[in-house]
Length: 193
Image (cartoon, rainbow, N blue to C red; front, side, top):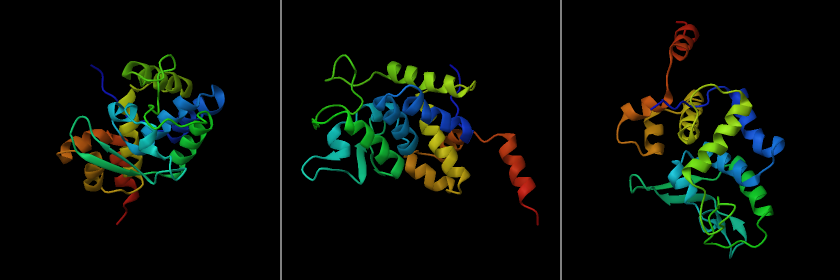
């Protein structure tokens, strides 16, 4: 089994995000990638999202938080909806004029009452990664790892990332960050006392 890596290059990350937005417009695939990158949900939890989880039909607006009970851990996670997620959901909403609250957000194209499978999600992500020229091992889990890597690079403390991920140990979170020699070198070169 190969190791999955976060998408470290901001340029390649932008290309992945643009693939289903401009190159091969597909709002469902675009929204799946954007939500995966910005919520750090496991793919199993992401694919189980329904419209009721992101949209308040009575009020006619998107929710401020997406709350899920994680399939793997049984723990509750509440994730704030940022501007990128809101934009992706708005684009997806435009194609779904009549929101059915029980319908899956990322429904299977042939069977609207089912969600995308993990293998379909993998193919969608892999196609965008190939467009971006990524030769690293990219999978569904890369979206989750990418969130943590870029949050860490922006100064988010690993202890907080551990909480956001609902990891049971710091060791697991550290593996997610995929810290390499170049990351260590940057610290040594930038901290000049």
